[in-house]
Image (cartoon, rainbow, N blue to C red; front, side):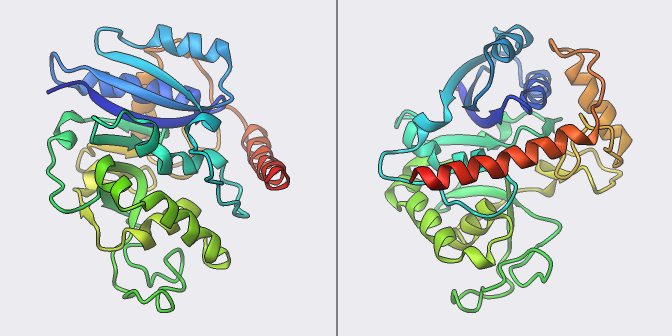
Length: 295
């Protein structure tokens, strides 16, 4: 198969997660397969970039850096929700606009993941008439979930039993996405329904792509908060990340993370305290306020 194109978004705080993710992809890729990691960067330092470069296997992996502001098409503004999630969560929406048009199938991954299976098999997945492939979110499942679903699904003319996917892993057909103007529809959807938005990017993606996505095996996006006897194809550290001392979920998953991290320039890293996590959240909120007054 030709080179695989994988897109991630990261700030300097989470680049350490990306390092472990890349090593896990390399460890499980089939012989002879190459990948290009497109990194949408949110103020990643030169020293972190250098450490990541020394951590990859250059015979398998190449890195392309894309400053966050450069991937947003002119005339498009980010939705400014009130959550503490970073603005870079929206970068997955712009993938079809900066990826070369001849590349029609792209895999987006959150950086807080570890891969345990060959991702080439995902690229071999036929999408048919669907725009994306993703995995059902096990915490929510359907729009009518009272904890984290689409609270105004009735007003939107959608069934409460519509299935709800997690946006941490998205196999995307970029041509179909552009042809149907999906990015603009999602931004408008979030802006028009802000009081109902909980997980902002997921809200917009699920509403606009309702029933237009292909459901992948749950093993391709297994949450670290859920214990299992089956080996997941991909572990997703959805809540506390293993870089924090407060991580208290599946310890085998944590060991797996550090197994791969210790193959990088961040080897022997020791988990950090809660203050770093809270400072990051505060910075995310301040960045949104700054962006709001710049529009």
